[in-house]
Image (cartoon, rainbow, N blue to C red; front, side, top):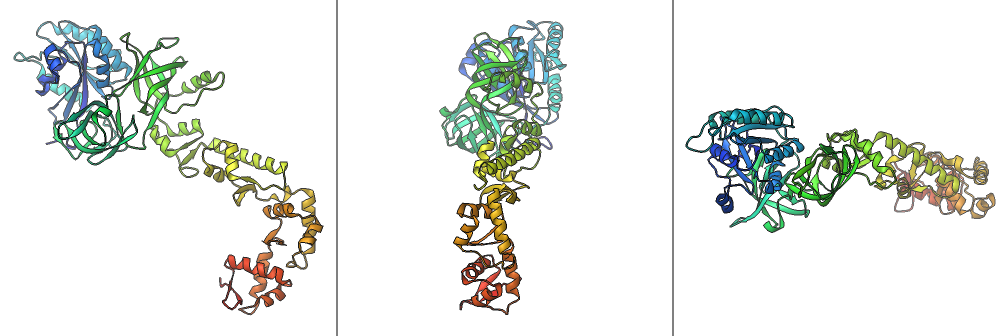
Length: 598
């Protein structure tokens, strides 16, 4: 039965660490009864060369799963794949040898990855006094991200096995102190093994750090952006309908061959992660000056070649040879494979950094990165970017701090105000350059403002701007008409003052100085009302016509309407058609009209 309050399959995961042949695998076997050296070559040579996995029940009823990593320096890359997705380490030092080169290398890796939860186990305590090794190791660990840890001295090999009864409760205390991961939201499972199982097909294993995987889930193989389906799940030897973090998990997949996946790939929830080829990172423990060439980024179970460009004393830009699904705050390390040392620990600060095109841009970017520590903050990300979609922000690992301004677009308030002011300037400039031209199209305004979505340009419009027929212009643009056109409209206004429905014909309009271009500008600015081709009245004439027609006996004929309005059939017919289109009047089958009630 699972521990109270915990789902079946759920187990906190702890990685082993320490020098080669200090008894890590023997210790895990003593704790779990399982041999983690699963390869024939491992058993023959007596050392681990690949990752091993085992688990056991603790005194509290909790379950702990172990990722047993190789200690030999030739397999440090494999060791990093094991610890990269694990929140805690059981650090092993042999009493008869004490602190050794790979002890230091493993600790440097844990420190670079910012692993903060650990336990020291001094093995082979039956062969030498464990106290010197314990004291030295505790000092080393205390100076790292692990800090002060509990220590237990054991002798793991049977039959003279001692200290295991003290180690199990210590592991219980370690596991209890690890923060519970997020159990809802998107999944990213770093793959540490991929193989084909007889009768099942493709199986991958990994440490589920957050989220939940269920049977029939549709996931994505991130490297190839290829959809896959979960056809089976196992955790700690149990077939399960779902597994919730934290857990070691084996996933049987449909839709991909085992050879198409490998260590360092990831299974992710589709549409919720950004595939990053360029990232800006915070450097930890890096020497001053330029970073060496030929570096490898280790993050999760991935090991990817990178080109590193130093930006500031503690920041760099990494160009990845292959894209990885990364988020702000991810921890990794840079390692020179040939030198067997760690160049720097890294924390991801930006998974969509701006291009560095101008002279001095790197220095500006370095100063901006100084204020970032890898803690995802939605408000800060929106401020830095000005505009960003909610989905992209969430995929970076940040919260959505406020409501979108248009669709799923978020805008920094200060940047949004700047864009509104710039739009007003563009519309005014456009009107001054050609007062009779129509306003800016919404699409053209978006292009000139450099907006990624035309919908944003429309949402920027507010008084004194309006959108009419897909164009942006001033809400009270009569003042923008050229003096000659404004004067002509004034003359027409005086002529229509006493006979508002006696629309002038084309010759009369032309005589007033109103050609087609001027008429379109006057209509666009609201100075004239276009009833039909060649029929122009003053604004408000339509409302006045409704008032006049409402006083007629209902229904009324076109002739009755014409006489009441004091106009000709040339004006009355299109005016009634316009009112009918608006739902103000309704024409009967016999040609009579009556006002629409209400």
